[in-house]
Length: 118
Length: 140
Image (cartoon, rainbow over all chains, first blue to last red):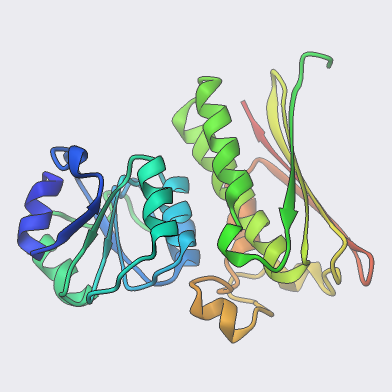
């Protein structure tokens, strides 16, 4: 799925990385607990979360993700956006809840982990 | 041995927002050196978890990454309170982190087990009231 398609499905605003909306992503994970993302995520390109702090960006970077979606209208500060922009991540913000956002993407073909989470 | 590359960082304590900066830099350096993506990811995750731990529990410390022909070694050293029971600390889910840290998305008791999972060897030496030293290696 193209990130632009995700943006359309989630009716999301693009906070940075507009030039990368044409990227294709093949799986996603929704989580507020960064410890879990670090321990269990595998090959997911998109992180959907309601948590807002710079560690969300750093966690995404560690996991080689290239898109973050902040759910339920959460507004990250400039420090977060600047960090994401520096590392060429796409950051989206949607009014929808984490549950609804994940459901919309999943039913439209963006699956979870390709591997089995250990 | 003289060919080894060494990166050194001071990890500031009490500043959660900047935690992880050293790991981001190491990831960038390893990418520039052309290492395999999976190797870079394992080193980055292990170091990031360790760095977060130093900020949360030990008031910061130092991180050193040594790149040799055979391995990448991460040495994390702090002068924090030390780990009372290393075996217990290694159990998934065991945590002494505060509610504040949990509300920031960490402190789930997954850090140390995840560091072990992502490295080929990990040694922890810790003395109460003195500090903790963790040496991890990822073989190339």
